[in-house]
Length: 241
Image (cartoon, rainbow, N blue to C red; front, side, top):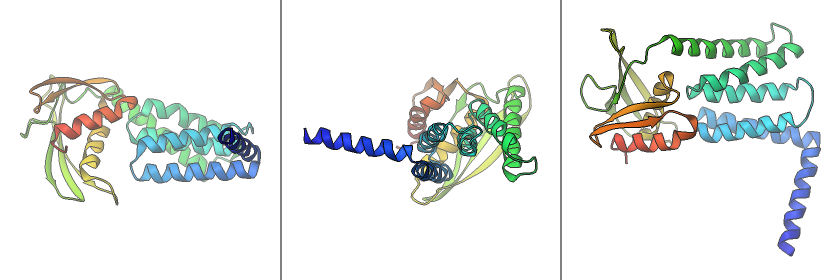
């Protein structure tokens, strides 16, 4: 009974805090700041969860054209775009801009930044729609025809090559990508997450992975909800675990 009373008291205090505009603003700012820090640290799943909470809190205020709602929408759009989820990011960025144009003048820095964000997202979607997928199968084989090659790696940094080609075409390209682990971040996981960003530039659903480890082709998913499974698979594929 005592435990139930304590829970009831805590719930009542939470309701009162949310009903207090100053407390609600402070909590929104905290969530937004933490989401920003996680986003900058590449911890996108956690950043997404907090960004969604900050958006819900801002929307609960019911203030017309609330600038906090626009900020949260833009933040969530940026987190999605960083992972290659441009279709999810686009409507969020567009909603944020629609709010801001009603409250701010055209030269306001928030308007300019929002317009640039939306333009970048739309350009990425257009490029994806125009580009033929550069590989039918993703291979980890250690040769020049594989898609991903680890070139060198130490405890804090690494480089890997992305070798692209268009089906039914002689057009090929090679991009060498540098990865630096942030403080406390595992370099192997940082490599895998950067590779997944590249994969999501071309695939939003299922794709085929030609596994050297398993000796067969595996169907994998690039969907946001399957991130953890894809990361785990790739960590094993590159002998990181």
